[in-house]
Length: 312
Image 1 (cartoon, rainbow, N blue to C red):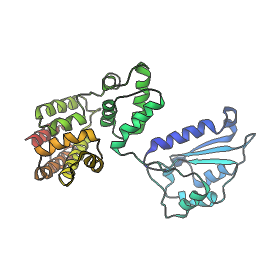
Image 2 (cartoon, rainbow, N blue to C red):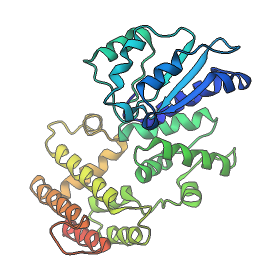
Image 3 (cartoon, one colour):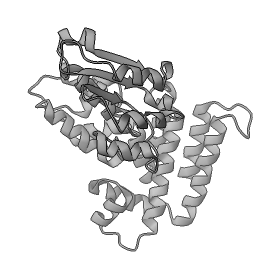
């Protein structure tokens, strides 16, 4: 259970492939979907006995669709069938830990809580993922993937699988490979936009925005506004720190230590008072792109005006 579906899918796939042999699956494997099943049907399935196998495997995918009635599984959980392996995939949320079902699961099962990674943890996860394939990826390339795909591990996994196939085994994966094979520009992304604004390079920031307007599917304005909001919130937090030691700033803001210099530079350009105004402008831009408060305005015009307001 948990907010990060990637690890839930990974565990389910491993069990699906390893618990039963290929010959045993036809009689002893049942896959149910939360939206199309009931607790009664799950219980009926798990109480069956395996045929010519030690275990039967019952997998319930998208079990969060049963959130209103999932507590009814408690009676089975407290007295499970020894020859059944029941796998419940409860995505995007967690069970209420105060309820009897959760407490019963602690004693009768393996309960895995799949927590979402923070953005600053994902580059390290990428490095470890690539290492398991006996390959390497440089840090800038890792950050570019996070900048473009956020913390969506399934999308990152797919991009990395593609890069592993397309980049020669003896070569390190770089930001150039990402630009060539995945389609994200190493020079035009939200990370570079924040860096340009932090350095006061408004003309380059506008070039990046123009690139975004030409590739709206890869660079949706909502994601860009979210990235800018996060940056200026962190900058506001930076101003409030008494200790500006890079390691302390890195830990409190949740950023890499090498990125602290960018925040130091941006803090000199944007005093605390101006950041409050900028955050309000970002909020207004967010409302505008959702069609609230104004007549319809092209997204590229909204972003261009916002960058001018911030840079001014």
